[in-house]
Length: 494
Image (cartoon, rainbow, N blue to C red; front, side):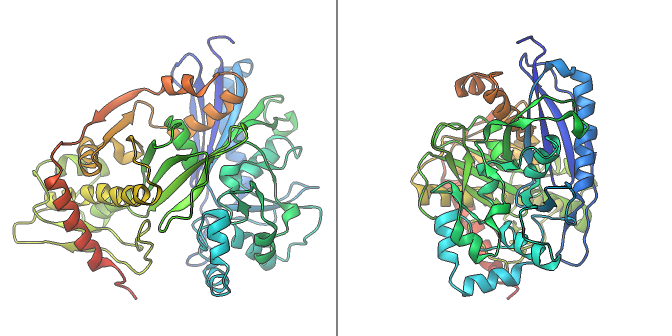
């Protein structure tokens, strides 16, 4: 391998596509980003034009390949928005309309009906998920029914990773990986295969689904007929949150990451044995390296973290830009007794209460904009603690440390408060683009660019570390006060 050898990650997110190189010698990456259109046909409905997504892949990927040189590209890795579904024709490659996006809620009634029919225990036991329109299964069924799509040998169904690989290989490969399959509500994470019973219950033709291959391994080769230079191995695939866990080098049981984005996703590596169903948590496949048994993770979803900062900016007008919140919050030593529960769209893990609504408790005449900013920052850490406490209680696995990424992870104030609340060290890496990094690492591992998980772990570079205060008396009191505020928000909108 030459020192300029690299792997290119395609990060196909919810609002855009990024292609990013990761180099064996650690040099700075090349990166290209392109947004695509969000379609909202009706309230609660969200769709994407998958041809537009593919155009963004071609544009960004070709730009990066041109900069790094085709001969230096060892492999391509793919990470993607999870749960979004596509249907297309195998013979023509044409999609059957737009993709239905993970945020789409059109199948809420179907999910409620399936639960009333008694399907939830099977879904929980076999998939680790809950019956919710968030996941792919009911989206597939609704798409087939509403669009009168013929169910025959020409039909292909897949998530965004499958669509991109199909296009990259010019129709040679209809594949996915276990991390994406495990988010469909159709994949048995214990037996590692599409589940006949669930496919039948949800009216999804099992023969139209992609082959499930290990997350790190050869999925196919790019075809010159795709508009991309031919012959490049496609060798790593993972859903975005699992890719971030891998990119954070959380390879051992007990390692965890949190991505502070619009919401937050906490993933805890629980090892190679599928854990029992855990109330308030999702069980998912973290990755499969093809060694015979996948690695599992518990996942907790926090709906509102960074979105609460946007609310301070756009709703209350107490900051004019998001980066101002940290310095403003740091002008006061604490929140002055103010507690904000940002349950603007309900509460996610571990509460799962769609009827919860935002509350502000503890206001006095002395409360200022700085106290509100501080309480908002603290709410991110409190919600993360709730998730991790539930994970630890259910699994019996105590986290070693918390590795963090996402936009709000730049706030030292937040990360120190998080460390104090959890009682463990919080670590922020130099490279914040952990999702793309994880996809690249999975692909490079398959192609021998990197030789082992130990080598990848050694490549993880620390930017900053935050150690908890040894005395937890005040932090636990603050958390108890937070839980009192949460109780007041629960079931508010019923």
